Amino acid sequence: MPHRLAASFLPPLFSSSLSNPIASFLLPALAPSHHRHASILASLSSNPGELHRKIRRGRGPSSGKGKTSGRGHKGQKQHGKVPEGFNGGQTPLEVVHGVRGFKNNFAVDMTPLNLDKLQSWIDQGRIDPSRPITIKELGHSRCVTNVKDGVKLLARGKTELHQPINIVTSRASAAAIATIEAAGGSVMTRYYTRESIRRILRGTTHPVLSLGSSSGPDEEVKKRFFHRLPDATSRKDIEYYRDAAHRGYLSHQVSEGQGPSLFFKAPGARKTTTTKRITSGKTNRDENRIW
Image 1 (cartoon, rainbow, N blue to C red):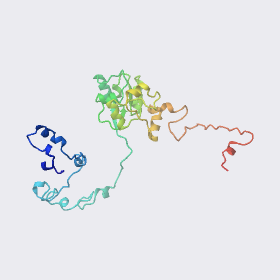
Image 2 (cartoon, rainbow, N blue to C red):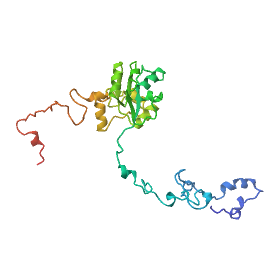
Image 3 (cartoon, rainbow, N blue to C red):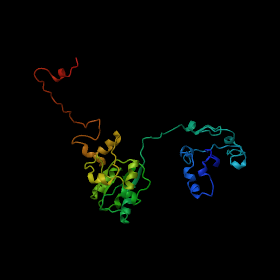
């Protein structure tokens, strides 16, 4: 703190005397003073929950980690570490039976939706069959819950479906497609991501229209929804949704006589070759020479 000036250093006119009320009133304003600028350096601190104190084990019972230090009484886990798969000296199961199978890191977690449950929701009045049924209607009606990578339409209870519906899901089985189309309805499969599904349920993304759709989003849809619905990017997903047998939303991109594959052509498809006319004089090859 800055040092304060004593009253003896002030001029006689502005001394702290009660006999002169005007001088006492003007004293705080006319007396020399020191200003200290405010700074945020003294108030900086870490975010709450960012730092944690190290657990001090074996420092008495009041800490909660005293005596046995949280390891319990006796045993191998209290005295040391146990290797993974250790079976107490007995031959491990991995050695006796071997390691089988693997974990597919590219697998997608699809939520199943059967036709009998869909018809039950329609009969209860929880889903309107006269309007298109998308993931938004399925999620808000609680017909499917905890959707991760998408919804797959299956054909269990296909005999119970007795009215036409128009539904859009991530995937659909061949039996489910045949059953719905036989009743006069339609099925379309399209690509979704986990984030896009969450945005659809929040109402910030259109559940069907995207740039890759046959009828892309118009200006009204772009103004109404804040986020755009993404399209498939990997080869596996693009080829799946280009297949008309899956009722994919990209099937309109496949020309007649071609297959959904991006690298393999359909049998019997011929490669059209164009003949170049060579003008008199220099050719295009000669014009593009560097030296």
